[in-house]
Length: 96
Image 1 (tube, rainbow, N blue to C red):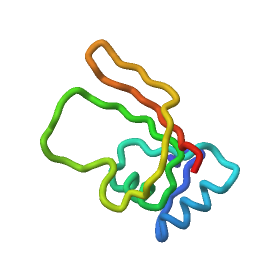
Image 2: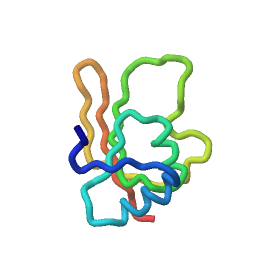
Image 3: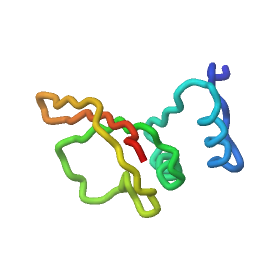
Image 4: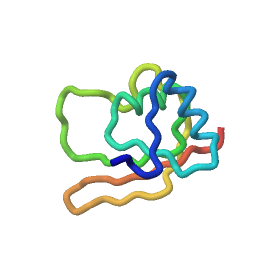
């Protein structure tokens, strides 16, 4: 069964995402795709970040802001700290 309001993106991902972002559709969201978020950050296609920070270190792994990420300013719009120390923070793109 096809997903409602979804579009399969193949080929030139960046060009297709730029076109979708410029259209009058719903908000585009990425959940849990480290590779796709790197592509979005490298091509300045992120308007908002919803980050969850957990109080533990793993030692190794992928970096959220890896090499190639375009410099951009964000401002915090909301934050919550849970009883066990998890931080939920939302950031929107600040003026350029």
